Structures are given as structure tokens and as C-alpha cells.
Length: 116
Image (cartoon, rainbow, N blue to C red; front, side, top):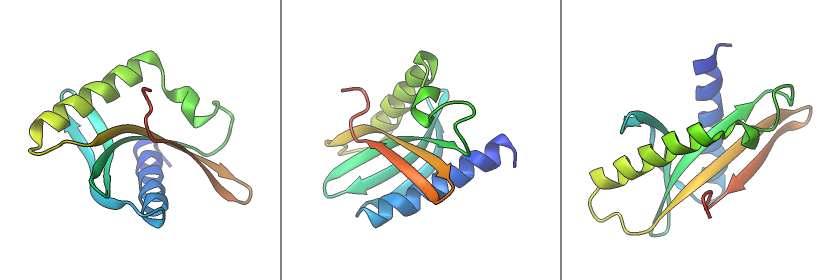
């Protein structure tokens, strides 16, 4: 499985997990502002701009540890560009979803307001 396939698998797992938590899928893999926004989901009147990190093991660390300063800046830039492109975008969250494959399935690490 190559890098893009792993990313797509993580996003698909993330969509299923968040839908089970009551979120509505809006969009995925948006290239905007020179960066990529993995997922956009909606719950009630809020939009969630989500960075997804998927790991098949802890060999390279936990998913959250992949969020380097540079990756955070790219994520923030994509979020701001996306919000500017949407009308009536009042309630939003910059969110993070880490997914780790385990022997029993998957564990999920959700941070609703990643930069707070």
C-alpha cells in the first residue's frame, strides 16, 4: 500500500467513524491555498475542517506526532482558504482525527478544536 492509498484508507475510516458519531459528510481531499484539506464534515450548524492521520503501527510514532509545525501551517492555510471560498461559513472547527490500526481493529483520537 503506497502513501496515497494509506491516506485514502485513513480518510475513508475517518468518514465512517465520524458519521457513526452523528457527523454529515461534506467533502474530502480539497486542494486549496497551496495545501490539502482532508475532510470537511458538518454537525448541527458547525463545519469541521479535519486533518486525518492514519498509522498502521506505532513504528513511526502516534498519529498526532505527525503534526509537525510545517504540517500545522499547511493545514491552517488550507482551512482559511476553504472558509474564504464558502458563503455563510459562521461556525467552524479546525479538527484532528488520528487513527491507529491495532490488533483489535482501530483506535481513534479526536480533537475537535486542534489549535485551542
